[in-house]
Length: 68
Image (cartoon, rainbow, N blue to C red; front, top):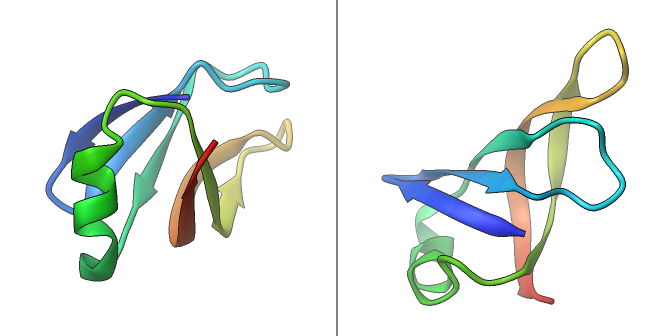
């Protein structure tokens, strides 16, 4: 997944298996170094998501990040 990053937020793009083009994510300060080091690389995100009516994720509160 490609990542566009801002302060404490990033957008996941190129989501495998989803119809949507991207989903906004908010991460905690403890993930800052990971986000900076993996900015345009494929990653796995685990967290709590808000979904739209078509059951597609709209926003994710990140709990864990891992390199894919």
